[in-house]
Length: 252
Image 1 (cartoon, one colour):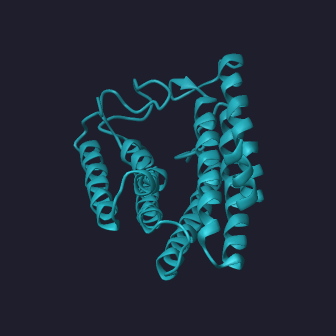
Image 2: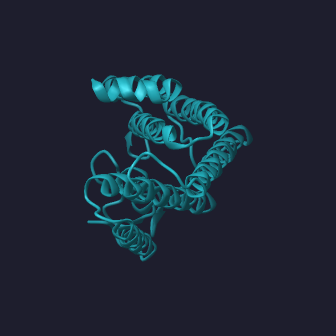
Image 3: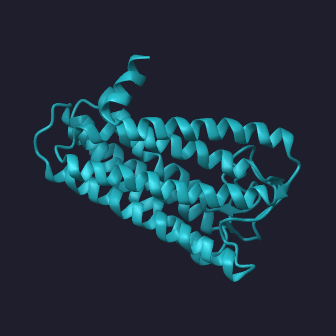
């Protein structure tokens, strides 16, 4: 409860917006049981569920970090950019899923392709903005938080931005599976291909550097150098997953 109160104090907009998306994720779980609509071999509501929860985590993560930046105007603009972009993203994903259609990689009509492009432009814009936030974390020299933690945030944002743009590779290919069409057998929930390479693995691991590197910096690292070394190792591991996918090899 103390964490939630502090989170709301740090950034009320992202705090409450995150709750909306958490509730959306729960609703999507219920819909997986209430609906038998199938998209690419799995229940259509699994994808909205994953995005609802992912956006919820992202909103609360950034709400927690942004308090450390001494740039209230930049933080305010970025906060509302998150809200606008994530509404665009999730409305399209949920509407298409509810109608049994793909949201990403959907080229079947001009309108659906336009929606896919709109999502791409919106999320790319937000990713660049997140990179700008990372720049300000590097530019600012004085923090009240431990520098191991700040370095975790700095490097976590860099890797988040880098592997967010990996989504552009999937968009250019109009698929995430390497070696076969999308929609084959996959791992539970995440649905990563269990027979071929899947670019979503590196994408997922890479973007969650945003949470893992700061946690390492705050709880485990004894120096900033350890955070930097851990970040390099994390990057190399994620790149290994990326190469593995392009070699048409499944994670398991």
